[in-house]
Image (cartoon, rainbow, N blue to C red):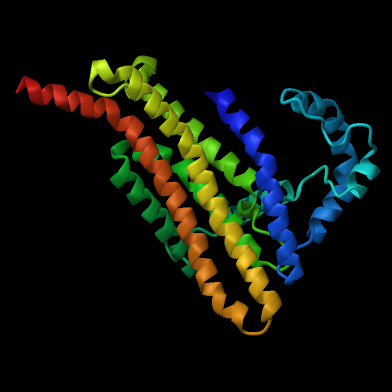
Length: 306
């Protein structure tokens, strides 16, 4: 199943990239495209050669697994960058900035926390934390709070990534499919890990087979495909909305640079928060589905006993 999934990506990714490139070219013609951010160029100028040296040893074998050739083979770091490639891609730099920014903000907030005289910023932060804790309790149950660190990390990283596009000279990290795919795979691996941890491997596999033994093979296949489809669902939804919003805003800014882009900012802010909310709620529902399976089975047996 994993091989089939990655084979699908390998087959269709070049076509998707081609369409994306055509869309970006059209956006550039209308003034809506964006060039490589200055900070990305500087990071590659400082560390690109060192990273490229590592990639020369690592990337060719990986590309060889799919019968492809790594674009940097036979090139120097300077030639590779001159061809338009970046050893450290834009999304990697942007997401690193997101992590650093989030850590700094949390460190500042933590240093100023006070139970006697909380500031307005602290109270706002506490409202967000309590809202997230309440959702975990409602959707997962009493054990939901043990997943707070993971869900809160998703929430902070995705929200900051979405909002990064509002800063001049930067690009939303989640406007890149590689970032959203990595987030979706992390969520997928986490909730399946929780399912195995809490139900055991046998109970975990029973979750895929349904209540009717005769239909178990068919249900197992359907559930397996359904679970892998969640990776695409989580990643494409987040990527499509943030990338689309950036492209539309860029084109409109190129056509009407005065006034109109400011009017669109509230909608972009709403989309940033909404997509963050959707991602974490779906992740919580997937966790709840795994953790409640054994409980529901137990309740059913108790009901039959009475």
